[in-house]
Length: 186
Image (cartoon, rainbow, N blue to C red; front, top):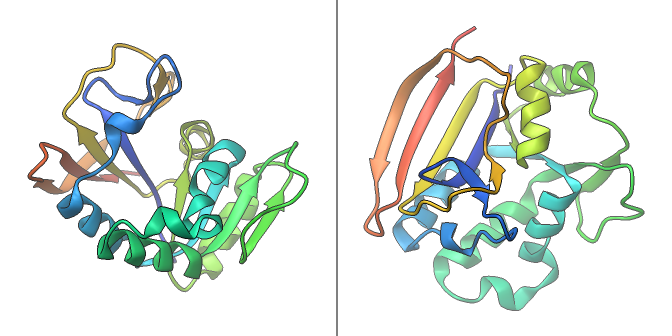
């Protein structure tokens, strides 16, 4: 069975967006981004909420976005190769290939997707990941912590969910970002 992984970039105080909705402070440096590419290369399907999908779609819809370096070009190719499922009640159509819309998050459907998948799945977006956590669907959390405290905003992890975790990997990067990989104990 494939794993479902919640991978996120957050401030040290646990926010994926600051109070103004910004997250530019979380942009990884080249070495951290190359490591993200290694992790993402093993993902066959991304599950997104609407806002996260719209943020990520630029990796396919804006060719100039990926032209900054070899690392960003590689990431664009990795992202475009994966299947995408967008959970949204409002999105009328998708702007990227290999993408479909689901109108509601159904934990049983995700369990079936995990059971049938030949490669891992990732979930993006704090609200959608919170639903997956509450349903007991997540197998791992990959936290990239930026060297910044933003003081508020959108939390990476929801209130009201208790998880026992096992640290399975950690890395430090030149820009001060730290990676923590946790297995979720069931």
